[in-house]
Amino acid sequence: MDKYYFDTCTIIDYIDDRSSFNKKVVCAITQIKGLRVFSEYMENELKSVLRHAEKFYERKDIMLNNYIKVKQSSNIKFIPNNNQILSLHRFCIRQEVRPLKFQDMVHIGICGLENVPNIVSEDWHIHGHEGTGRPFIEKVRNELRFNDPRHAFTTRSGYLKMEV
Image (tube, rainbow, N blue to C red):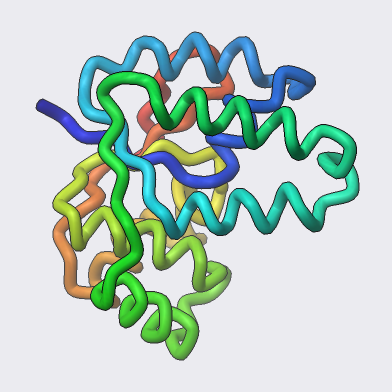
């Protein structure tokens, strides 16, 4: 069974019914036949975004309730923070892989630690390519010495669109 890791921006589109992408993202995610993988690391980042982003201030409780419903749905694997993930977080803070933010590197690294071949992300820093055409996930995998993720998908087109 394929596994698909979800990063924060995809979950925000999924739980924000006011997002212009919500219907398309929900449609794309329902097409996933494999195991959906969430992490405590992503969840903490999600809560921070909802707390600090002005545009979500009035709706953060509704969005968190929507997230809880999604998280409780079937076919979800939840990865709690552990010593490996905390070490990965500290390592990524010290590394400089431009133009990536260390959080993006951690999401990619969690896929490597958990052998998750697919990452679903609307973040260009994850599914994009550097000027040479080399995918960012490949660059981070090499830096972290992991084999996964091998594929990055976006969902805002209404289906799983493989970018890498």
